[in-house]
Image (cartoon, rainbow, N blue to C red; front, side):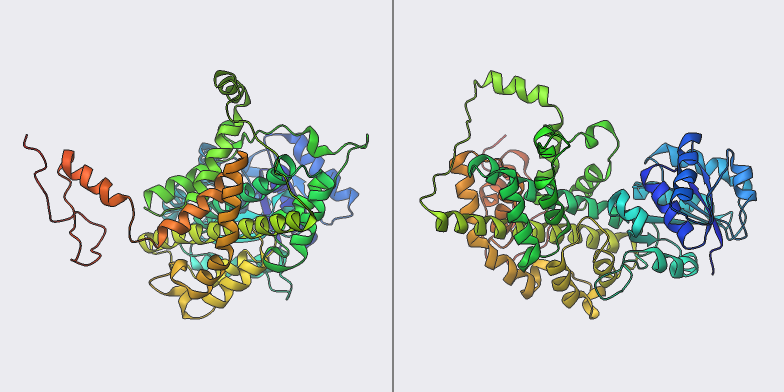
Length: 496
């Protein structure tokens, strides 16, 4: 299907960027936004950039739909939640069989599947498409993760391949993510992985700045080296980290020095995916401590006033300390340990996130192809990481992409990477404990590796206590590992 015209509802930084990207491909974009000024600014930007055809403004859904060919293709870029429901309801009188809605919002996958069910009797397709890379990528070519009815995906895939980011070999970073709400589910987990990776890299920055007494420019140089070679090569978050460390304002001061240590998006409602991904990990019984701990750091950071109160109550009882290094060689060795620790946390974030997707895929029968996910995340997205992508592609490009058991901790290649990083990871956590460094995601990754393959967990005692007061039953040693289900033994520890 050749897409000649389409609509964009929601023309903020993401929707507006995509509208201009699509217009550059010759698509006449009909745009609607609660703010008429947003659409007018978009049209002015198109003229300034000599983009043709210039998007047009439409103030109501009837006029918007009348401007489109059949089948109509309507893109959303909206806040998550009830806003999308209201837009779908407003559009329905003007939709016909075969029309396609493409929801590019960071929407909850349950809402996506509910809307798909609502529209199916009308014969209208609803594609939930994750869009990653930030507003810059939305304008120049994002990573796209569409999920829904295969017929609708087949119609639009040629266009998606045209506008998506391309990897180093020119391959588009888009593919059919799966059926139902798979596209939004995978994007949700992408964001959970992103939070784990961002936390680990931020923890490394803080460690170098606070405990190694390194200045912003020097840390920027470290990040530049990390992103130029080895396991962190071309990792988007490390590469942008270098730029953030080095960027100065008009007055010659580092912009980073002005930034308060608060992440508020989870609290103010603008970001839901971090919360949902952690809820899903718990709901699916998947251990994802690197992701979850990163989220808790974000949450506690949001209320600085509360942290000030706690510090006052404790009278500054947990002071940080500088690490004394005898020479440049010791400093270089410490920075190398830190690099491996960051890589370990980033790889663990991927492993944990893909494990969540795996369980949900089996439950919902989305038929996710993991080689396609790997390609979607190759470029244009926030979690871009060349070395990890190469590692996963070697695993998923074969039949393992659809195997029944996709636990990446069973993969020798993944295990080898995590074993290589373990000594450095352990040394960094020890250094962090000694200096009161805030390294929650790095520390959680160490614990994750320690307990995931451990056959002498403290839960032996835990299980006995549960049986003592709750008669919860237990399995006996020597009877095999058993399944994750209620045991068959009880001991009457104390009569009622």
